[in-house]
Length: 131
Image 1 (cartoon, one colour):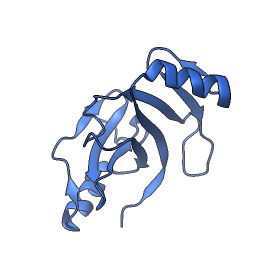
Image 2: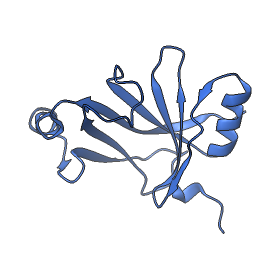
Image 3: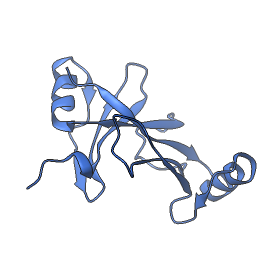
Image 4: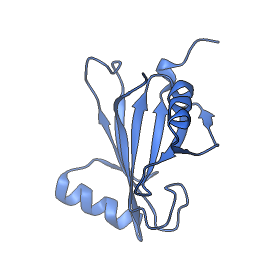
């Protein structure tokens, strides 16, 4: 059985991403990167390769990246085999997005939980087969 092996990040829908990111920086000490109104956090666990990271990012309020407009947050969860995880979810009758994105940051897929929350599944490039 495929399972999630970690958290890749948290995305927050915001009416003013820059201001919200500044608040997190000023009050919670996040080291905000202006290019994406977010922060990068190094990860160090036995299941996560050295040099890995998680992110927090404020997203525009009108983004469709997080699914339904009522979703205020979206979790990004790290998986070891995205294709196998998506197939497992489909076989289980879950609401899986047909779209899969493959780029330099790895592979991304999405599932919507029973309460309508969009969950992003991420297979980082360091876990992809060579080829």
